[in-house]
Amino acid sequence: MRSLRLIPALLTAVFLFSCGGAKMEDLATEAGIANLEKNINSPAPPPAPPMGALEEQKEGSAAGGVDKPITIIERKLIKNGEVYFRTKSLPDTKKNIQSALNMFKGYIAKENAYDYSENPQEELIVRIPSQNFDQFLDLILKGADQVDSKKIDIEDVTEQFVDIEARLKNKKQLEAKYQELLAKANNMDDILMINREMNVIREDIDATEGRLRYLSNQVNYSTLRITYYQNKPKGFGFGAKLGDAVGNGGTGFLWFLIGMVNLWPLWVVGGLIWYFIVWLVRRNRKKRV
Image (tube, rainbow, N blue to C red; front, side, top):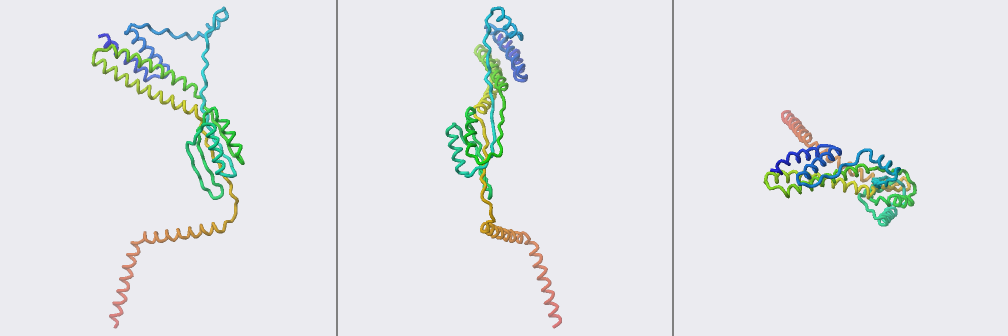
Protein backbone atom coordinates (compact mmCIF):
# COMPACT_ATOMS: atom_id res chain seq x y z
CA MET A 1 0.00 0.00 0.00
CA ARG A 2 1.07 3.50 -0.75
CA SER A 3 0.79 4.85 2.83
CA LEU A 4 2.60 1.79 4.19
CA ARG A 5 5.56 2.41 1.88
CA LEU A 6 5.72 5.94 3.23
CA ILE A 7 6.16 4.96 6.91
CA PRO A 8 9.96 4.20 6.80
CA ALA A 9 10.68 7.58 5.21
CA LEU A 10 8.55 9.33 7.82
CA LEU A 11 10.19 7.55 10.74
CA THR A 12 13.65 8.44 9.37
CA ALA A 13 12.64 12.08 9.06
CA VAL A 14 11.25 12.17 12.61
CA PHE A 15 14.35 10.49 14.06
CA LEU A 16 16.65 12.99 12.40
CA PHE A 17 14.31 15.80 13.37
CA SER A 18 14.30 14.93 17.09
CA CYS A 19 17.97 13.93 17.54
CA GLY A 20 19.81 16.50 15.46
CA GLY A 21 20.67 20.14 16.18
CA ALA A 22 19.04 23.12 14.53
CA LYS A 23 20.66 22.35 11.16
CA MET A 24 19.74 18.66 11.32
CA GLU A 25 16.17 19.59 12.23
CA ASP A 26 15.86 21.71 9.12
CA LEU A 27 17.24 18.93 6.91
CA ALA A 28 14.99 16.31 8.52
CA THR A 29 11.93 18.54 8.17
CA GLU A 30 12.68 19.26 4.53
CA ALA A 31 13.16 15.54 3.84
CA GLY A 32 9.90 14.65 5.60
CA ILE A 33 7.98 17.38 3.81
CA ALA A 34 9.42 16.41 0.44
CA ASN A 35 8.47 12.75 0.89
CA LEU A 36 5.02 13.63 2.14
CA GLU A 37 4.29 16.08 -0.64
CA LYS A 38 5.57 13.63 -3.22
CA ASN A 39 3.08 11.02 -1.99
CA ILE A 40 0.13 13.36 -1.83
CA ASN A 41 0.88 14.71 -5.33
CA SER A 42 1.47 18.28 -4.25
CA PRO A 43 4.27 20.47 -5.61
CA ALA A 44 7.53 20.55 -3.68
CA PRO A 45 8.53 23.81 -1.94
CA PRO A 46 10.95 26.09 -3.79
CA PRO A 47 14.64 25.52 -3.00
CA ALA A 48 16.41 27.70 -0.48
CA PRO A 49 18.45 30.59 -1.92
CA PRO A 50 22.19 29.92 -2.39
CA MET A 51 24.82 31.22 -0.01
CA GLY A 52 25.86 33.94 -2.49
CA ALA A 53 22.36 35.37 -2.83
CA LEU A 54 23.33 38.62 -1.11
CA GLU A 55 26.28 39.19 -3.48
CA GLU A 56 24.11 38.42 -6.51
CA GLN A 57 21.49 40.82 -5.19
CA LYS A 58 24.10 43.58 -4.99
CA GLU A 59 25.31 42.80 -8.53
CA GLY A 60 21.75 42.90 -9.85
CA SER A 61 21.24 46.25 -8.18
CA ALA A 62 24.38 47.62 -9.80
CA ALA A 63 23.18 46.35 -13.20
CA GLY A 64 19.84 48.10 -12.84
CA GLY A 65 17.93 45.34 -11.01
CA VAL A 66 15.61 45.83 -8.02
CA ASP A 67 16.90 45.04 -4.50
CA LYS A 68 14.86 42.62 -2.41
CA PRO A 69 13.79 43.93 1.01
CA ILE A 70 16.13 42.93 3.86
CA THR A 71 14.43 41.60 6.98
CA ILE A 72 15.43 43.49 10.13
CA ILE A 73 15.32 41.30 13.26
CA GLU A 74 14.17 43.02 16.44
CA ARG A 75 16.67 42.52 19.23
CA LYS A 76 15.43 40.64 22.28
CA LEU A 77 17.07 41.82 25.51
CA ILE A 78 16.58 40.64 29.09
CA LYS A 79 17.36 43.40 31.59
CA ASN A 80 17.69 42.69 35.32
CA GLY A 81 19.18 44.71 38.13
CA GLU A 82 19.93 45.13 41.83
CA VAL A 83 20.06 48.29 43.91
CA TYR A 84 21.01 48.82 47.56
CA PHE A 85 20.52 52.18 49.27
CA ARG A 86 19.95 53.92 52.60
CA THR A 87 16.75 55.77 53.38
CA LYS A 88 15.41 57.93 56.19
CA SER A 89 12.12 56.08 56.55
CA LEU A 90 11.30 52.50 55.59
CA PRO A 91 7.50 53.02 55.46
CA ASP A 92 7.80 56.12 53.28
CA THR A 93 10.19 54.37 50.91
CA LYS A 94 7.87 51.37 50.63
CA LYS A 95 4.98 53.71 49.86
CA ASN A 96 6.97 55.54 47.18
CA ILE A 97 8.01 52.27 45.53
CA GLN A 98 4.41 51.02 45.45
CA SER A 99 3.29 54.31 43.94
CA ALA A 100 5.97 54.05 41.24
CA LEU A 101 4.92 50.46 40.51
CA ASN A 102 1.34 51.56 39.99
CA MET A 103 2.52 54.32 37.68
CA PHE A 104 4.68 52.05 35.51
CA LYS A 105 2.41 48.97 35.53
CA GLY A 106 4.73 46.83 37.67
CA TYR A 107 4.17 44.55 40.63
CA ILE A 108 5.92 43.08 43.69
CA ALA A 109 6.97 39.46 43.14
CA LYS A 110 8.61 38.89 46.55
CA GLU A 111 9.00 40.80 49.80
CA ASN A 112 11.26 40.32 52.85
CA ALA A 113 11.81 42.37 56.02
CA TYR A 114 14.76 42.16 58.43
CA ASP A 115 14.28 43.74 61.87
CA TYR A 116 17.89 44.47 62.80
CA SER A 117 18.28 46.60 65.95
CA GLU A 118 20.47 49.36 64.51
CA ASN A 119 19.74 49.19 60.76
CA PRO A 120 16.47 47.44 59.88
CA GLN A 121 16.02 46.80 56.18
CA GLU A 122 13.51 45.57 53.62
CA GLU A 123 13.97 43.72 50.34
CA LEU A 124 11.57 43.84 47.39
CA ILE A 125 11.80 41.91 44.13
CA VAL A 126 9.68 43.71 41.55
CA ARG A 127 8.77 43.08 37.88
CA ILE A 128 8.61 46.11 35.60
CA PRO A 129 7.76 46.38 31.89
CA SER A 130 11.14 46.58 30.18
CA GLN A 131 10.40 49.89 28.47
CA ASN A 132 9.75 51.50 31.88
CA PHE A 133 12.73 49.99 33.72
CA ASP A 134 15.10 52.99 33.55
CA GLN A 135 12.40 55.54 34.45
CA PHE A 136 11.26 53.44 37.40
CA LEU A 137 14.81 53.01 38.71
CA ASP A 138 15.55 56.76 38.46
CA LEU A 139 12.34 57.61 40.28
CA ILE A 140 12.88 55.34 43.31
CA LEU A 141 16.52 56.42 43.67
CA LYS A 142 15.51 60.08 43.93
CA GLY A 143 14.26 59.42 47.47
CA ALA A 144 17.39 57.54 48.53
CA ASP A 145 19.55 59.06 51.24
CA GLN A 146 22.65 57.23 49.98
CA VAL A 147 23.04 54.72 47.12
CA ASP A 148 25.50 52.03 48.19
CA SER A 149 25.42 49.85 45.06
CA LYS A 150 23.65 49.54 41.72
CA LYS A 151 24.02 46.70 39.22
CA ILE A 152 22.30 46.27 35.84
CA ASP A 153 22.67 43.14 33.68
CA ILE A 154 21.54 42.95 30.04
CA GLU A 155 21.41 39.62 28.19
CA ASP A 156 20.87 39.43 24.43
CA VAL A 157 18.63 36.43 23.62
CA THR A 158 17.86 37.37 20.01
CA GLU A 159 19.68 34.30 18.68
CA GLN A 160 17.71 32.02 21.01
CA PHE A 161 14.43 33.55 19.83
CA VAL A 162 15.31 33.07 16.15
CA ASP A 163 16.43 29.48 16.75
CA ILE A 164 13.35 28.53 18.80
CA GLU A 165 10.93 30.14 16.35
CA ALA A 166 12.60 28.32 13.43
CA ARG A 167 12.38 24.99 15.26
CA LEU A 168 8.74 25.63 16.14
CA LYS A 169 7.87 26.46 12.54
CA ASN A 170 9.53 23.30 11.23
CA LYS A 171 7.80 21.10 13.80
CA LYS A 172 4.40 22.57 12.99
CA GLN A 173 5.00 22.01 9.27
CA LEU A 174 5.87 18.40 9.90
CA GLU A 175 2.80 17.98 12.11
CA ALA A 176 0.60 19.39 9.32
CA LYS A 177 2.01 16.89 6.83
CA TYR A 178 1.36 14.04 9.24
CA GLN A 179 -2.24 15.22 9.51
CA GLU A 180 -2.56 15.15 5.72
CA LEU A 181 -1.16 11.64 5.62
CA LEU A 182 -3.47 10.54 8.44
CA ALA A 183 -6.48 11.74 6.46
CA LYS A 184 -5.48 9.46 3.57
CA ALA A 185 -4.49 6.39 5.62
CA ASN A 186 -6.95 3.48 5.48
CA ASN A 187 -4.99 0.86 7.42
CA MET A 188 -5.31 0.63 11.20
CA ASP A 189 -1.60 -0.12 11.72
CA ASP A 190 -0.66 2.94 9.66
CA ILE A 191 -3.14 5.11 11.56
CA LEU A 192 -1.79 4.01 14.95
CA MET A 193 1.82 4.55 13.88
CA ILE A 194 1.10 8.02 12.51
CA ASN A 195 -0.82 8.99 15.65
CA ARG A 196 2.08 7.86 17.81
CA GLU A 197 4.55 9.99 15.88
CA MET A 198 2.16 12.95 15.93
CA ASN A 199 1.95 12.72 19.73
CA VAL A 200 5.74 12.93 19.97
CA ILE A 201 5.82 15.96 17.69
CA ARG A 202 2.98 17.62 19.63
CA GLU A 203 4.91 17.20 22.91
CA ASP A 204 7.94 18.81 21.28
CA ILE A 205 5.78 21.68 20.03
CA ASP A 206 4.27 22.26 23.48
CA ALA A 207 7.70 22.28 25.13
CA THR A 208 9.08 24.67 22.50
CA GLU A 209 6.11 27.02 22.86
CA GLY A 210 6.56 26.98 26.64
CA ARG A 211 10.22 27.94 26.30
CA LEU A 212 9.27 30.73 23.88
CA ARG A 213 6.63 32.07 26.29
CA TYR A 214 9.15 32.06 29.15
CA LEU A 215 11.72 34.01 27.14
CA SER A 216 9.05 36.46 26.00
CA ASN A 217 8.04 37.07 29.62
CA GLN A 218 11.66 37.68 30.62
CA VAL A 219 12.10 40.12 27.75
CA ASN A 220 8.84 41.99 28.32
CA TYR A 221 9.26 42.29 32.11
CA SER A 222 12.51 43.20 33.82
CA THR A 223 13.35 42.04 37.35
CA LEU A 224 14.75 44.46 39.92
CA ARG A 225 15.89 43.55 43.45
CA ILE A 226 15.51 46.58 45.74
CA THR A 227 17.14 46.52 49.18
CA TYR A 228 16.87 49.59 51.39
CA TYR A 229 17.78 50.15 55.04
CA GLN A 230 17.51 52.76 57.76
CA ASN A 231 20.15 53.74 60.30
CA LYS A 232 18.80 54.25 63.83
CA PRO A 233 20.57 56.48 66.40
CA LYS A 234 23.12 54.56 68.43
CA GLY A 235 23.08 54.69 72.25
CA PHE A 236 23.76 52.56 75.29
CA GLY A 237 20.09 51.69 75.73
CA PHE A 238 20.23 50.70 79.41
CA GLY A 239 16.56 49.78 79.64
CA ALA A 240 16.65 47.64 76.51
CA LYS A 241 19.85 45.90 77.58
CA LEU A 242 18.45 45.29 81.10
CA GLY A 243 15.34 43.75 79.58
CA ASP A 244 17.48 41.57 77.34
CA ALA A 245 19.57 40.49 80.36
CA VAL A 246 16.45 39.46 82.31
CA GLY A 247 15.11 37.56 79.35
CA ASN A 248 18.44 35.86 78.70
CA GLY A 249 18.78 34.93 82.39
CA GLY A 250 15.34 33.34 82.43
CA THR A 251 16.13 31.42 79.28
CA GLY A 252 19.44 30.23 80.77
CA PHE A 253 17.69 29.01 83.94
CA LEU A 254 15.17 27.05 81.87
CA TRP A 255 17.98 25.42 79.92
CA PHE A 256 19.63 24.54 83.25
CA LEU A 257 16.46 22.76 84.39
CA ILE A 258 16.25 20.91 81.09
CA GLY A 259 19.88 19.80 81.51
CA MET A 260 19.14 18.52 85.00
CA VAL A 261 16.21 16.50 83.75
CA ASN A 262 18.37 15.04 81.00
CA LEU A 263 20.69 13.65 83.75
CA TRP A 264 17.94 11.66 85.50
CA PRO A 265 19.81 8.30 85.22
CA LEU A 266 22.67 9.77 87.28
CA TRP A 267 20.19 11.01 89.87
CA VAL A 268 18.67 7.52 90.19
CA VAL A 269 22.07 5.83 90.53
CA GLY A 270 23.23 8.46 93.00
CA GLY A 271 20.09 8.01 95.10
CA LEU A 272 20.60 4.24 95.26
CA ILE A 273 24.21 4.66 96.31
CA TRP A 274 23.22 7.19 98.99
CA TYR A 275 20.53 4.86 100.32
CA PHE A 276 23.03 1.97 100.46
CA ILE A 277 25.56 4.09 102.37
CA VAL A 278 22.94 5.26 104.89
CA TRP A 279 21.79 1.66 105.39
CA LEU A 280 25.38 0.51 106.11
CA VAL A 281 25.94 3.31 108.61
CA ARG A 282 22.76 2.52 110.53
CA ARG A 283 23.60 -1.19 110.57
CA ASN A 284 27.03 -0.58 112.03
CA ARG A 285 25.55 1.64 114.74
CA LYS A 286 23.09 -1.06 115.78
CA LYS A 287 25.88 -3.63 116.07
CA ARG A 288 27.88 -1.37 118.37
CA VAL A 289 24.91 -0.87 120.62
